Image (cartoon, rainbow, N blue to C red; front, top):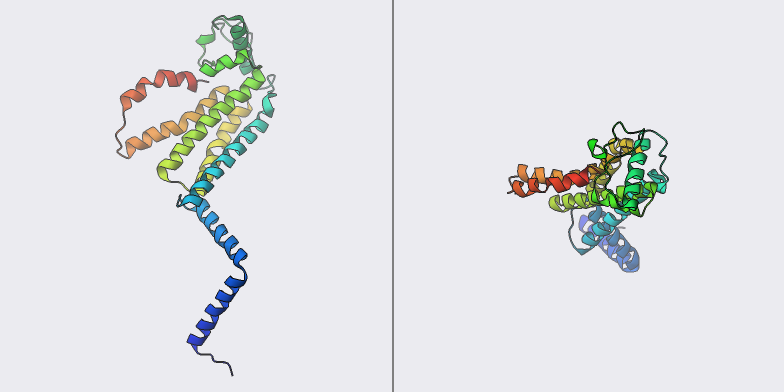
Length: 235
C-alpha cells in the first residue's frame, strides 16, 4: 500500500521537482530568463538585465515611431495641393528660394497668403532648422523637420521615465498616448506644421512637476531662454 502521510507526499513532490530540474536544465534556464524579462517589462529597473532590456526597448519604440511617422508623411511625398498643406508648401518654397538666393525672407509673393510680409503671420516657420531648405526639397524637409522634433520629444519622455522610474510597460503606454493620439495626428494630417512644437511639451511638464513637487526651480534662467525656445517651438 502507498504511504499517504502528508510529510511523505511533500518529500515525494520535492524529489520529483528536483529530478525534473536536473533532467531539464535548459528548460529551467529559459523559464528563469523569461521570468526576468517579464519582470523587466512590468517593473521599474532592477538589476543589469532590467537595465539593458529597458534601453533596448526604448530604442525599439523610437525606431517604431520613426517608421510610423515616415509612413504617415509618405516619406516626404507630401500633398501640397490639399488642405492646409497648400499654405505650408507656399511657406517652405518661399524659404527655400530665399536660402538659395542668399536673401532675407521678408516679403512673400503668394496668393495663398493674406499678407506679403512673411513675419507678419504667427504661423510662419522661423526655426533654425529651416535653413535645411537650402539643401532639401519642401516635401523631404517636412519629413526631416518632423522627425527632428519627434526625436526631441522622445528625449523628453526618456527624462520623465528616468525621473519617475517608469517601467517599460508604463513607458510604452506613455509613448503611444503622446505620439499617436488623435490630436497631433489630425493636425499633422491636414498640414498644421506649426504643431511640431507640441514635442516640447515633456520639457514644460518636467518644469511644472519640479515646481509642484517642491523642487527648487530656477525660473529666471528658464524664462530667459524662452525667446530662443519660441523660435524653435513655432516650427
